[in-house]
Length: 139
Image (cartoon, rainbow, N blue to C red; front, top):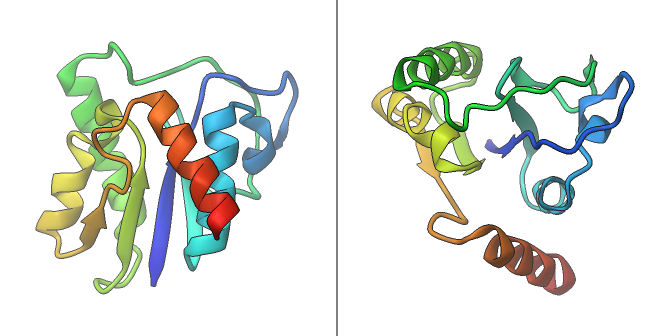
């Protein structure tokens, strides 16, 4: 099974909604569409909530891992890893998230035997949007 892990974003609705709808940023919306078209499933990596199912109702929040201490990022990654480890060992994770979200999570997943790919690694935000836009048009 191939599962996309899509990072949350700062832009959100101002009221409770399904997680897949509450995040309104352009990069999130493009990544969501790409994930829906190309993977068996997708989940959201929330800085505050951990792993969130797209249809889960959540409330808006202001929290990010960007700028947090290494210890905070490490603890977040451990929590997320535990939540993801319910998946069979042959699950392939495709991570669409910045370095702050990947730094400790990817090694935990790989060390547990999961295959992990970061399709947009090394691309800036504008490049990621362009890549996704092209992939969605060509797909």
